[in-house]
Image 1 (cartoon, each protein chain N blue to C red):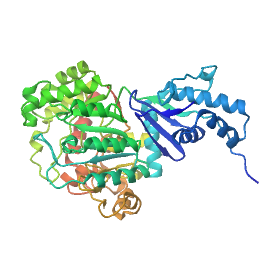
Image 2 (image 1 turned 135 degrees about the vertical axis):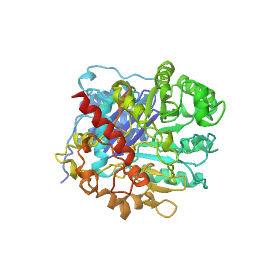
Image 3 (image 1 turned 135 degrees about the horizontal axis):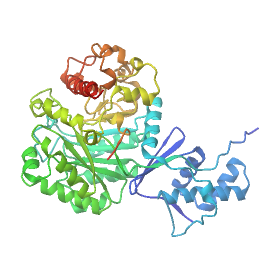
Image 4 (image 1 turned 90 degrees about the horizontal axis):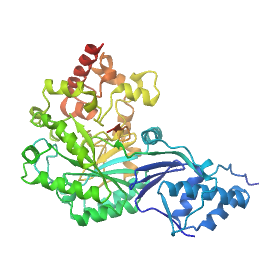
Length: 453
Length: 40
């Protein structure tokens, strides 16, 4: 009996335990050490009988127990869609007593995140693969056009980050599908068992591309919409017909069984569209991710600031708990304290980018985050492993604590603040200073909190 | 002398469903909170 891992499953061995994610049904699992070892046997092509024999020999347990436990494991893995067996079913005779209880997916993800912070594992990486884009969005931060990494360089980097424990990989741009080799990159990443996210404008996703995505470990495609109709959307992308094309791709992706999230960056000019976009998203069967954050361009230009929500709009957004709770971006410091179990917030790092995540630019520079434009290494010169473990700049960032922040450490609103070091560096006075936009948002939150008392 | 390995039956240490979760923020998101999600 031949057992195989489902092709749409991404997985990684992290600290002797396999973390696996099924992109078809969005189930996630952390296997215990024995199950992780069995998983390794399945990957290396072992048959059912060989696995039973191996368990029995390795742990010196009787063959009957080894068989019963193997059956229970296979049943649990099959139930979650992680493995396939040549058309054969394993009987469920009392296996439910072995199966672990399913917890909230959020908690499983959090456990992985916390573990990655503790052990400095880059479990989530954003890979900007190109500067090129076929839209000209008014608020876009990507400025410079340079030659992007070539396919062989991208493949080499993917091999290296897989080796370091990266599981969740987000491809973005520019527009990822402007690359003629986008499909080849997906295939390579899927063969390395990454769980792949694609951030796209959706206008170049042909049916041929969707067919490929549906066969690989692609967790979700995030597509940006700027309104619920073409007039406002195309006004922002500056490309007539872009709304229609994005909408068509969303429907096609959904039909192919691929999870789609709608990103909705909110600006002064499209804020009134928010409930219509929410309704459209629900009609399409997608998740919605609105954001009030519009940043300076990567060259530091603040000409995008005039697009930001006005104070009045920002207050409306923050006061609307139902809608603002959909924002899935950076969380306030009080949450960091809660999740990390710290008694003193001031000894916590200001941000965990560079601890469990980072970003790679189209020319191979490594950043702690694609919002945090602080180059800590160059993948054209060094391997990812050398940069991740040896970069002096990165290690010095990791040693920063909230108490090092010049203005913020004594701020009465600190716990409510989601200060982004990238914004502080790009838009403020520097790395150790405040981010003016975060100050604006936090002041508004503080005021609302006081009014509600 | 070889030491007998401690045996725990192979099973999930933790498992869950993430279907109803929004995974991360928009484009310039916050990967360090990629797993810190909101229900939609």
